[in-house]
Amino acid sequence: MSPITIAGLKEMAGEVPVVAAVLAQLQSRTVRMTKGGKPYFDLVFADATGVMPLKIWSDTPMHGAAEQLAGGAMLRLEAEWTQNTYGLNAAHLEWFALDDEAIANFLAGDPVTREKQEKDYRDIVGFCGSIRDPRLHALCERFLAQMGERFRRTAAARRNHHARRGGLVEHVAQMMRGADMISGIYQELNRDLMLAGVLFHDCGKLWENSYPEDGFGQIHSIHGEMLGHIPLGIELVNRLWRDLLDGSQSEGADWGALKPTTEETRLHLLHLIGSHHGQYEFGSPVLPRTPEAYALHYIDNLDAKMEMLRDAYAQGNEVAPGIYERVFPLAANLVRPLAAVVLPEMVSEESEEEGDDGAEVIHQRA
Image (cartoon, rainbow, N blue to C red; front, side, top):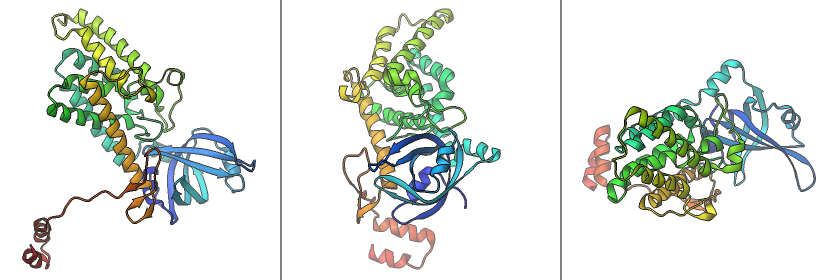
């Protein structure tokens, strides 16, 4: 059977078993104990589209094989898959090590995700290129030139939303599209500052949620664990800014005459990084205090929530017609969205284009 992605498996699997193969890399393996005192393995697998936790119980045939798995092992997993509130379950599970050719293809990522992320990155470059403030423009260009490759393989989170290799690029690109449109609606917003703030708001995640060049398991760094992405992002922007000022002097850039001042501009950008979680209890060291800070916080939250909703509809089981079970971290059961209206003339036009026999009847009803 042809393998599918983890995201594809989550969309397919439900209460009825689905026979499928998945290519994935072992991200972590933890030994846990049941309430009855029996050990089991909590495995986490990953590919370019997401992560997949899997429990291997001590009384199953694969428990011994799980104990022998090397860290970062790349496997083909075959099973009868089901999915419930607690995640995926695999009956009759078997796995096989990938050969060198299969590993190379696997690391390249699935074509759909790769194409989307390449377009998203091009859009980010385009938005950064449209920034008129020469200081913010130069800062964004310096970041992409120095950190672009690491940025492109970083996730937006460890779980919940865009938690995959390249997920941060997807998140930032969509936020930039939103920031660009909202800046045209609310004239008090500084578009240049908004776009730069979106690019840098999660830049500390390059140390908190990044991936190695040859794998799909997120790296745990001491800096990410001890500082977190907001202080790291502020530190990175300050370092780039200092380098930029030194370079501007040697290149003769006349930034001293610009208004607002270079120091004011730097401070407002740092404020966007520090306040983007919106509340102290969510990790922001400071609350939003400018229009751009409020707008960026809500754009960030909106894009994260929309991604969670897409995942929840794809993975959640229906508990009643049109009602889906709650998927963490969303607060409640979901209801099937309302479809866009289909007007009679729209149906008529489609029928005319198809040239079917029902076109005349539809015109009469309209």
